Image 1 (cartoon, rainbow, N blue to C red):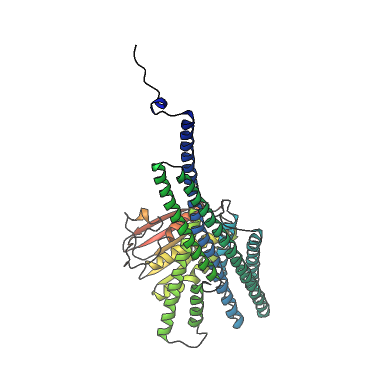
Image 2 (cartoon, rainbow, N blue to C red):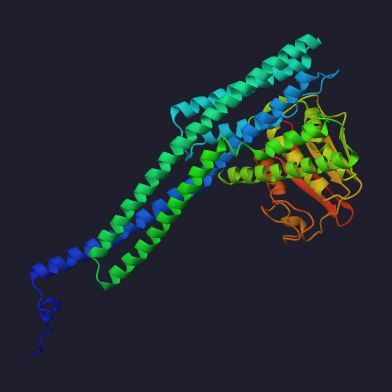
Length: 459
């Protein structure tokens, strides 16, 4: 008769109690590892959310403060010396863009920010104030007498003060609420650290080694959380003071100097001030493009279609970029075909972003000649915006990449044409959102033609 092999438990001389104890240890080990991994992954997502989205939100509010201050400066200049005919208030278009971005963040279904009911109420107040100021600006444009114009300007001035106070209150509330959220995240990291230590106490030699790895990872994340706490605290503390858009202050004072508000200037002084204005505008554009790209990637942009006058798109872009064209010795021209309707329906703020980015990009890559803006009807069902330049052009092999984020023909640190590489990418994303189509025709050393076609019936 063949001898039977003894059972494994009998060979190792294990009692039933010892077998149960081993099973318990194994279960605790696996459970401890699972809980630690889940904590680490959850905290990783929470930290990334705090580090990216909070900064985007704060920068958006800072940009809104900047544009309100610039609009206020524009109104103040008109109050001081009302021209005949009065110059239009053009800067408020950018305030509307920032208010729209803030409202989009609040209304997003996947919003990850800390918003109390009071904060939501402040955002609604900002939207209402923006709409009221826009209505007052329209009243100012239609005013028949200088007295009516001055009275409307004073009302606009008061509303801008109220809006700036509301924005300041929102910044202060966000500073407090977000700091509390950071403290809670840090406490959660400490609890997760203790969980990994508990799991390590029941591991065998291999399990102890794994627990050590988890402890090092969590400790690293704890250090990052503490550092982010310090950086965020410093950022939020400076928003109301040092970071009240120094770029806006530079640009505002430069505009005052350029308009000889503090005395006559020599030719060289005017040229220097123009260069300051150009570089400040370009830097603001790069910052805004970075924020817009982040919002687009998160799917938080929504469209608000309204009726608008096509010539307003041209006039606003010309007002913002004509100084750059004049400084480079370029001729910035525009044209609206007679077939274009008197009004169109679309998201006018997004259209303004598209035309601004295309035109500023054309001016950047054109050293001599002209940049031409055109609005026309390619057929009865579509209308189009087009920007034509006599710049350096784009080779056929490079054209498929021009709409990719952060792509540039020359990405070296010594490249001639500086920028973030996001302007055309944002144009493409916004065009797609608005059911439009963008085309490019270009040849090296002969210039480029960018055309964006939209349906007449906005969807």
